[in-house]
Image (cartoon, rainbow over all chains, first blue to last red; front, side):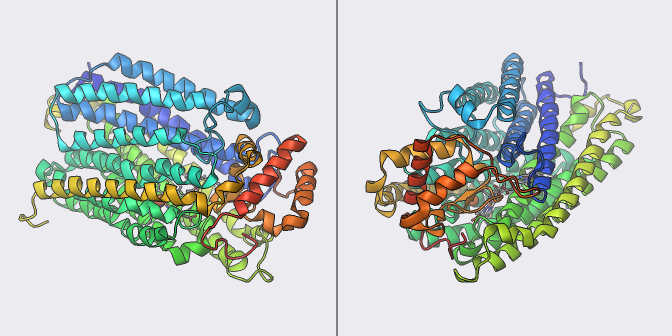
Length: 474
Length: 146
Ligand code: HEM
Ligand code: HEM
Ligand SMILES: [Fe+2]
């Protein structure tokens, strides 16, 4: 028995977290491959063409975040509901189904030419493949839906028989929304404009919609635990944050409907509403710092508190500031689809979603491993080194890509037809920034290694810490 | 936050606000769907264009290129390649030659794979790119370089 868990069934979160981190490592490896291909164009060609590396990089990202969200749900839903998980066995079965399906899909990308994979999996019958982020074969998409249904059923039954709190209801709403919006990945009209229009219902309504609910719920849960601040206060904040997220983010989707053939009123709607989208992220910063300042206890897991504050700040920078930078139509006219987009995509995904998953892992892992409320001091020091190395590296990646993007706009987009530099010539001009980005990427990898090493020392000396009664007062 | 602003009020704003904007989005989506055919020359959406879109997807062209500014940023924009590379007179000839010539094998240069497409597939792709270049994109991209 693990004395540090309130409910034994929370332990099914462990495989989800471990697998998420393994996939994270894979994601970074393929990021580095692409980083090199950006400057040494024929690196690994034709074994791993750029598009294949990119699919692996982005799909691993999405899948590891999904594993992270699922692990977070299996950990916090029983605790919030004050009851055991409805079926730990189902959670284990779904873990293996999702892990095997995910691994096979990635192997498919790497070992079979994409057109062959499309043929093998019957893409002609109901074409869904070959669209950014939604490259998965039809069977994999169906698998994701099946896993999501089983997962939601399991958690839904748990919440139904237990206590309903704002945190677990918001978490459930976010997760159901995630599954529902994914259904739009099966919508692929012949008309490219309609295809693009509905494609964003998955991508935008995920990251600037329902995923913010998931992020808010996880952040609220961890803050309740590490600060001991009254739940009423935290729940009010959570409602304010998610209200702002949906009020701005739903119509804010218009910032993707400027130049793809959709009507002109989106220029206004998209600009105005998306310009307000930084608000919920700013509220998360205030929320995290306020709660930590008003804390009623000194929680020994300092690393978890650092992740909680870090994710709020970095999400605000990446999504809020870098999002705002290019979200007004007159600006986006020039920056659309340049390295500025890539800069924003990186810091936003890392700051909001990669970091919120690492926040809950930081809080939960020592308990899941039966170590205590906090890992050893040495482990925390290493973890914080990992935090700073990865986060600073991501700041540099963002700055270098932004520099490349600004130059790209200047050379390629702003001049008239006759003076504008071609895409390929422009890329040569900005190569120095791609080299610098690659160096920052290596720094990111170093941070990831340090972060992984910190887990090896979690038990170090912390083992003597008394388990008695600790789980009760958390 | 001031005590006069209660949790209940925050919750009501959340429910009311999100409900309102979901409904607004559904209305706008309905209208947008209605005008897309006109803005995208739906009448010229031939079978060849539809097949071309499938070739585009099944070879994951979007993994390197942008199309109307969306996709990957490793290779040139193709939403206006029809205009950039000769238009009605010479695009098709250019495009056939281009697809056949890959990979260019210039050391160190970003490389595009050889997809071994049939003649019809190349022609369908060209039709798809031509159709795409005629979409009303509110005047994007700013110049022909995309
Ligand atoms: C955590 C939240 C967010 C994440 C993870 C995120 C991620 C991304 C990604 C990956 C893309 C590129 C999509 C593609 O490949 O075409 C993108 C595009 C964009 N994002 Fe965000 N984003 C977030 C929040 C925001 C916010 C709050 C704003 C506005 C304030 C914003 C504004 C934009 C704009 C304008 C584009 C289009 C760029 C272009 O025209 O090329 N994003 N975002
Ligand atoms: C070693 C670090 C990394 C390197 C060198 C790297 C490199 C790259 C490259 C070259 C691309 C393709 C850009 C293009 O289409 O031309 C890309 C895409 C992307 N990467 Fe990374 N990456 C790294 C880490 C990360 C991390 C940590 C995250 C998020 C947690 C991330 C999220 C993304 C996303 C969301 C995209 C798609 C962007 C878009 O569509 O705008 N990457 N990455
Ligand atoms: Fe968006």
